[in-house]
Every structure is written in C-alpha cells, then in structure tokens.
Length: 120
Image (cartoon, rainbow, N blue to C red):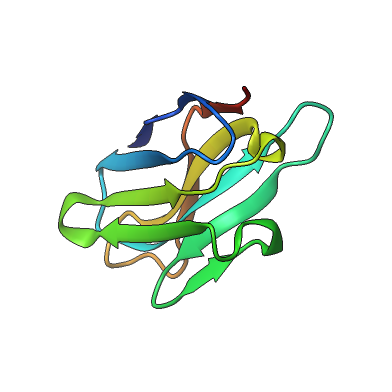
C-alpha cells in the first residue's frame, strides 16, 4: 500500500556530512509525521529525528542533524553534519500515514534501511 524508499547513505570520514532522503509513495491520503531511526549492531533501534508540526531530535544528534520535509513530494530529509564514528548504523525511515479520510489513526510504515558508516 505504502512504500518508503531511502537513499543517500554511504561511507564518510569523521567530521563529514551526508544527506539522507526518504520518499513515500502509494495509497496516501495524508502523512501525519515522518522520521528517522537508526540501529547499530548489538543495539536497539533509536529515534534520530522526527517531524510533524514540530521537530524532535535524539539527544546524541542535537545541533548536528537537521530534519526537513517536502509535503508536496511526501519526502523527508536528514542532513547530517559533524558525523562521528558512533553515528554508524542502519538508518530507517518511518512514516505515520492516513490511507483515507475515514481513518481515525495513521498506520506506521518503515523503509528498508540505508547504511551509514563513519570511519577514517
């Protein structure tokens, strides 16, 4: 019904920058919120940033990462600056989607994930 496709991951040196994108497509009436989560090996998935009517950031990325959204394109972006080795993880896009005007609550969807590796 709804697909989330992430792009922009890769290998970057410490202190470098990357920009992730996530485009939602399919049977979308509207999107309440979009966000990014990450999961490092052996660790639980954690919130990186989310955006709805406001933005929310995980403590470890505040001041370094910026989330933005293009509602017309159903796309969310994550600008990551001053990257550190501890930012290495698979980054997942998430969206809370209303499939029709009759929905009382949105349905959550996940992307397939994109690898971000910060290493010299």
